[in-house]
Length: 163
Image (spheres, rainbow, N blue to C red):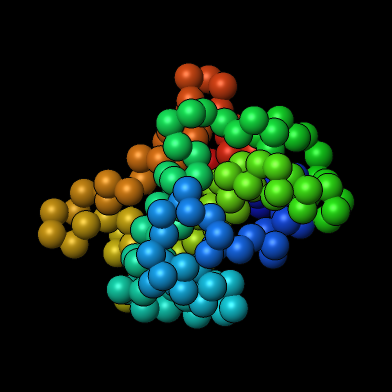
């Protein structure tokens, strides 16, 4: 797996404030999980099976809520090159769900890369994080990623580059 090029709005990720984003319908606990993950290295966040699975489900929920059924964002999905911080932050103001969609895609990529690098036999793995313990099926929360990737062929170019 090659390295994911940065999102055009990478510089806006640090400006995301979870509390005012009511459209995301995140609980206080989910917001805290996202903040904690930002404050710690990804290996730390994915070090425990339960916390790893919870974090992945929250990131997938963010993706689901931000991308909705309306298709790619009106502005962010059309940006081609990496924007300077001031322009990226402007897009956070004018198209917050587009920025949050790119944030979630970036985090999912980071999660996959981190889990792929874990040692065989580790408590936390791709299988333990993305599949149900009971029946081994893929967790239902993955569907928003498929929707963002496809969207009838008109999905977000950043999302479609590497996944």
